Length: 216
Image (cartoon, rainbow, N blue to C red; front, side):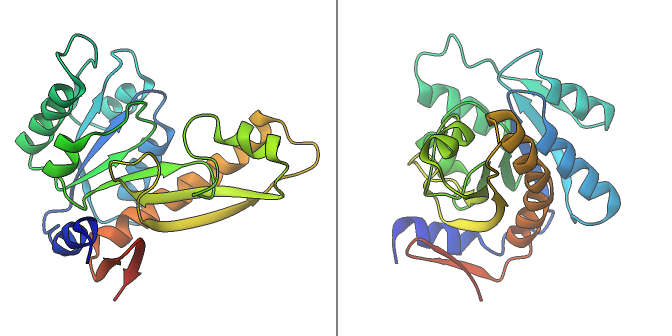
């Protein structure tokens, strides 16, 4: 069993309070999907804290409107990326967060935060990974001429958009698609997929076998 597998497996049943921490950089539509799923009873969890690295991020307003505590931790001015990640970890642990959800957080997560939450950081990405990681996934999909794209929710590792895949949903790529039209259709699926995947992680009964997220 790999180190990632062991860490994820050890954490798979350790979410008794189901307290989420959500990291955002922008408008926070996937954060809103989590808030709505909790309010409707489709996601059995609570959001303890929303952190943004951008003071004016729309996601902060969404959180405040829902009565959720927020914090701004600007990524600028730190001696190193690791110092910044440690600060994020300190904020999250001080609120007893158990699972960290990246929702349009435009910063790469490093070892200090991953080590603070082993097997307990999830990310959503607008492509069918491993295809088209990184920025502008929809633009990449159109440039490559693929007929199907979609959304992936995965566990976070040190490698960019490379962790074990929890859930994927497909979206057809239409002949007349632009980057914006494809992104809009993928976003609809993101809002369904993220709460479902987070619930799957919180429910436990899973392990990581090599690169595979496996339900026991």
